[in-house]
Image (cartoon, rainbow, N blue to C red; front, side):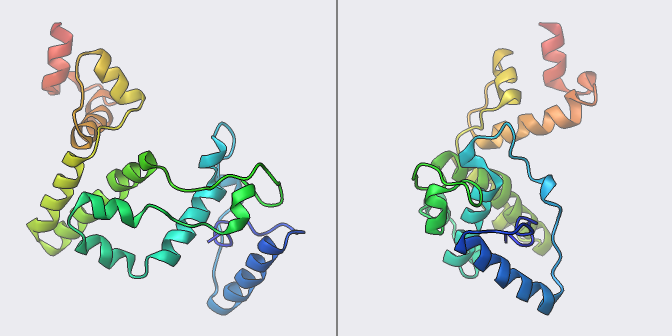
Length: 204
């Protein structure tokens, strides 16, 4: 994961990144793997717990923990079990006192928080279920995607906060996603007169 992410191109002193680098070099030669430019990862203005290195470590833990992850996602039909699938991920102990390679920090467990799990379900699992249902023409997966979004709390971000100031509050992630979609496809495109909510706001 770190190799393809372009984060193993430096010379390291620590054993852990050197081990990763050695493994990646072998796999790269064997399978012709490519890596992206490391500058694409954004560390500035980001909380350390959200650093790309930490998220990649958690992703690696998820892959290790969840064999046949896609199959599990489409088989599980309740929100609680889906949340458990992405919770309690044990990252490599190296990351307990690192946020980036070779910079020791105060020891802290790097687990995905409940809010981050919800974001994963909203932005990854629900769309995946919906697309899978569309491709197979099976309404059961479309309904599960809707049910999942309706059961999760509404996202709180600049867009939903602005709508709330205007008196339009999302009661679930289904509604907050709808507001984001409306913002992108109507507000940003200045199609207020094509939107019933836009017309209502203009008349207020």
